[in-house]
Image (cartoon, rainbow, N blue to C red; front, side, top):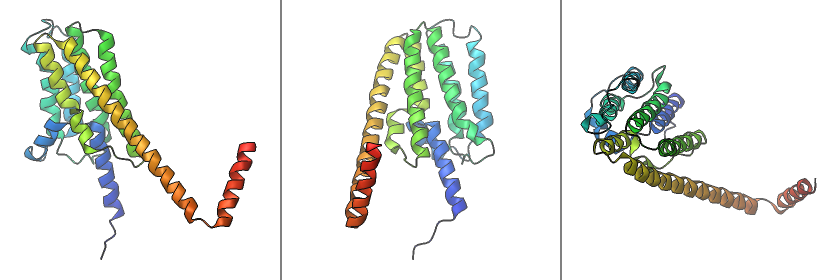
Length: 233
């Protein structure tokens, strides 16, 4: 006997799944999810991380331009935000978590990149690629189309991207690291997105063709006449 899911529980499940996908957590967050207990309050903790990185951006903390100090912005965000992963994101203001996570990631990237004289255009291309992935994820889920789980791990997630960027800055090779990371993410996100939308369009076309075959001859003729009339108009 098949039980009908409770509408409220299903709504909460979808809400949680959407917010988690919007966060764009990567392999490190997935690895630690079940080892962090109940987790930290996501809105407050992520906001603290954002403010902390902003404070670094407006001081001379990263003036050295290289060395272990360049990892600080990334480590602050990772250390504070990763422990929020286990939460169910059903709080009244938890819808703010994804934009706060993205703001913290982008600000940390800019803070590290500008301190190391990485070409600004390259930094903004990286931000654009990540932003496109976020937009694509939001648009798909609102259409009831969920990106595959592997794309979040392959895309490294915000936490691993920040660690890679911080490490690149620490060894004085951030420009090369950002260039390689940007190229990798662009190919990955663009290829997966295009492939998914083409597959969806093909499935939709096949479903439409199946409906046409199942329709009565009279209905099919009427539909064809209506379409022809619309094309002439």
